[in-house]
Amino acid sequence: MLGKITFIAGAIVAVTMLSACTSRKELVAQCQLEAARLYPGETLFSGDKISEYIKTCMQAKGHDWNDGNPVCQQAQSATFSGAMSTCYR
Image (cartoon, rainbow, N blue to C red; front, side, top):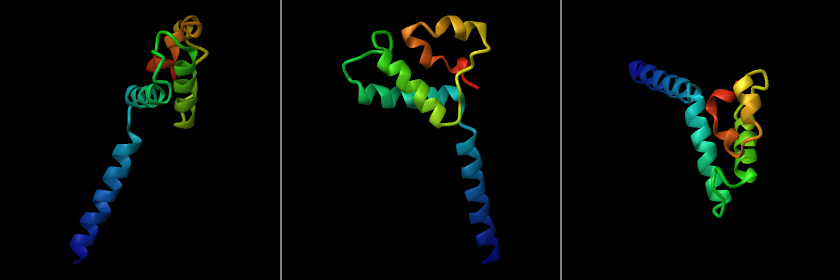
């Protein structure tokens, strides 16, 4: 019985750790999918709403926009900038 409880506790810890290791690329993809569902008439390249939603979504997941990266500073004016996973920290 104790072995079964230990196994279940270990599995819970492993799942928790794996979910915490979700990459920024995966998180951006999740946010893009949410944005596409929320704004079905827009594309990543045609609307600021999607880019802003992605940035807000990423912030809610604990990743702020990286203003210190020169590439991100230039990309910030582009509509699709919110989808650049390298621009989050």
